[in-house]
Length: 263
Image (cartoon, rainbow, N blue to C red; front, side, top):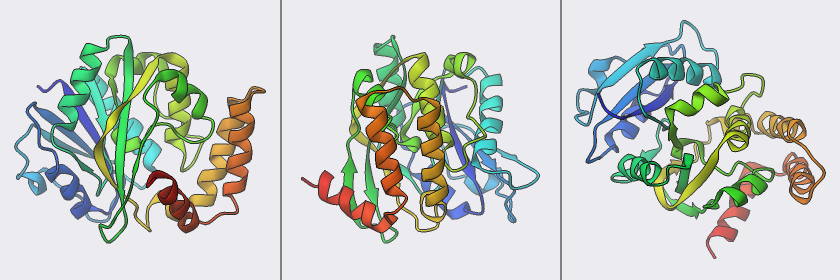
């Protein structure tokens, strides 16, 4: 059995899942767990016979329950298998070569750190490069700036499986922002970091959660900030920033980020 398991939730996106799995090119074994969230056409293990880097397992929810439920279902299965490390990847997003090997080695060398992400490259629907999103590397900066926006890019995370014994699973009460709530739980419980290297390519899909449910996502983020609020510069500014985002389209937001991160 591999040391690391990768969790990929899936809903009516078989070709996108294949694209993600084809990108896994590693010098270590990497097992992949696909959780189908009630798709009309169910993926089968045989659909991924091309994968030679480890095991592929596919599980199914009876109905479409939402990504947070698919993630928690997958975590429960992976945790029962006694993997040392758990990582995430989303449909259509791709890994740079040896992404998981680099993350596992980082966690082994930095024993006090239990949860990491990385920088990511962002592309549009037409595979045009937009910018590299450079997240803060050290825990102190991550902890402060998480009030402004999530300081981990969800498909880039990797963590020690034993951390789930402390923090539990993804919250299910914050629709379209379960990852943001999860990250606050993580940051309170352990030391975190981001590897200052783009290890994942992210596709900004016009049909993705961040696009189709953007207002709901921002409202959920505001609630999460309030749940973790204290009077300080970062919580106050983060609350104000997210309120402003309610009135800015994703297209404008992407343009502003592109101008900022292209410098």
